[in-house]
Image (cartoon, rainbow, N blue to C red; front, side, top):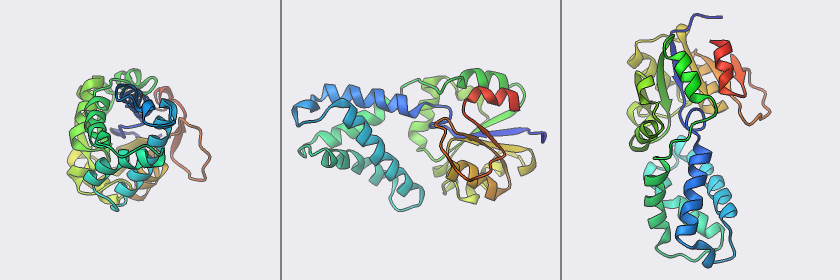
Length: 231
């Protein structure tokens, strides 16, 4: 096994449990805004519809088709339209409340803290995320993991998004690291695995959902605890 010195972690879905934090927030808002009174819709369908639309918008954002502001401004409008709910001032209110509340949820993926405790004495750790600057720091502070990392690198700072090779080059330069001793760890085949492969870095595909694929990552795990066996 190569002698790694620098580990680059994705944040959302890899360390920070986006689905749990987002789901909790959406259910809270659904009931607080009494959205069940607006139409034939339940909290579960509200959450699942948001997840589908949000995932699609993030793909568009990652390829430069829409801006950060467009993503934030349109997702709840699209959710309300998809569910057949009347257009009111709710989407604007939801956007602000969702952003403020979700990012302050503390939930991490299983074994994330134990793995960081184990790794940070042996390696230099960094965050490499496509997420927005203003919320990623809040997520890390709320979940108590900021101090594990030497650099927190976002697409906004780099001026490009994973899997663009430029964000990996930027990250390596900032961390004074090289490809031979660096390892990318993330849940996205396209952004984290293929992106790192193109940049010449080894990768760990955190395949917690067990999806089928034909890629050949350097390592593949279904639980973060497996990193303690690899590293």
